[in-house]
Structures are given as structure tokens and as C-alpha cells.
Image (tube, rainbow, N blue to C red; front, side):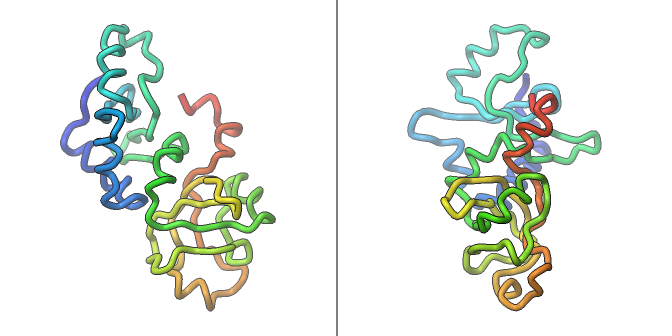
Length: 180
């Protein structure tokens, strides 16, 4: 387990910035202590300084997950955000999309959000902006990328894609062996 390099930190913060903007600062400087990002086996973990000190005494081969996994670096050194970061992204999300109850299951199976399943969308959402997807009961379901801006969503065909799927809580069941 090691600190992120400057290039790795930039990649992680750029990806997080798509979803939570300048609220990244609130992830690091929290009222309950200081938190940091660490790299372990190509995965980026988010953990407290206190937990970091405790994890330092565990051998690397025995250490599975020192904190909450935010994502991983691919072989081409691109950062891919994981669904395990959803609990940290949802409270700070700048742009949100609410899905109708009939489309929740489709999204949780890994499909994109169509205009017909769109309940609400945050005003002034730009095209290709990172969004957190909620149910109509304000339960975070996952996250994705807006395929259309808020204004385009109003006049688009009902079968057009409005949010490209990135990750959802259904992955806990579908891909449970690869999440750790």
C-alpha cells in the first residue's frame, strides 16, 4: 500500500470532479478526522489516517482491503470508478437524475436510462456530465454520464438514452468476486 503518485492523484481527482466537483475537499478534510487515498494492487482505497497507521502493521500479502475501494487503475493506466464509492459520491453530487420506479430494475441490471424512465433531472446538467442516479424515494442506485443536457431531455424521443450507465448497486450481486 502506497500513496498515489501525482499523475495517479490527478486521474482520481479528475474522475471524482466529474461527479462531485469542488466537493472533493470535503472528502479529505472531514470533521471526524483526516482521510486519504492509497493504492494497493491497482485499486484506490479511501481510508482515515488512523486506519492507515493500523494497516501499516499488516503484511501486504495479507492485506485485502484497507478501506473503502473507490476504483481501480486499468492496464492502460486509466482510472475506473467503482460502485463501492457510491456512498461517498451521493451526498456531494452536483448533478442528479431520478429514475421512475418502472425503470429502476432496468438500470440495476446494467442498462442505460431512457427518457421514458426519467423522473427528474437536476437543472443545468450539461451533456457528458457525471450524474448520480437515484430512485424516486431518494435512494442512490448508481452513477453514470448524462447523454443529453437538461434542455435536450425535454424535447427528445422517449426511447432516447439520457444517461449512460457506469455503475449500479446491482453489481454487488453480479460481480461480487471482482469487487474486492
